[in-house]
Length: 343
Image (cartoon, rainbow, N blue to C red):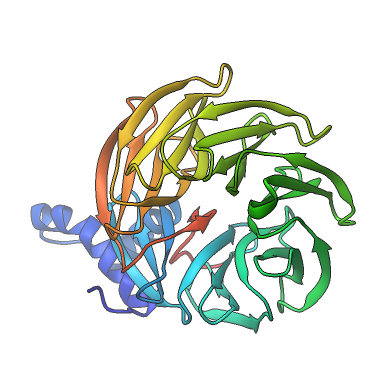
């Protein structure tokens, strides 16, 4: 198991891994050049921050090096996660301890923590990084927290058993997948007033917004993805996918949905909503996210203790990378900046 390294050690090890072939060839390198290379390499890389529920920690995985470079302790069996790269914050949900933790994205240092009385599960960050939204599985509500100190600002009423949350790219709305009500609740932001309640498939769990601004739910009970217009609440279509879909991400004009029971990812066309391919991944795939350049789809495999890297052009798995025990990564979990000095 990778030790829980302080950031400085993790950064040094990452840079040394990148530099060692060049050092072997040249036999020498200046300290200034090493520092310059370190800053450039770390700033350019994207990292997957993967919550590991069974080992109660967060794997930090360099997606270019394709290896885990650090492990951050997160007590209480974390599963949900949200990032806000602009403010440099990571937010996690620990289902076991009912805690929300805030970490510095650059250093991995914990900045705030709060325990919520209920069943916290899904999490999303507001467009400006000032508010954090957490779904309460047991009490049909969403907590609205201050992103700075995690103090409670407001609560919003949802349908039964809200799970995944998503905020519009422009910050104009928030949507929840209300699993036991078979619906989506859509709220105007920042006011938090209800805009629509819309039928989804059977037991929607994960929820995402696509590149065209539509809402997509992963319906675990009907093995489908439901497409919803957030403006008028209309259902625009459904996609039949694999058994027990969990989360949805997007790249290359396609949607990608993890199928827990099938150990696969379904890739479907966003225009005609037809499945284009079914991709074998690790065991019990759950969380799914996309790199900033849409060059890779990253899938967390809960039972395999790995992430799968999918090329959205060839629709093939290009790498399997080890994580901690029980990776879930329920939410948005890819960002650059780990190890990068704050400006």
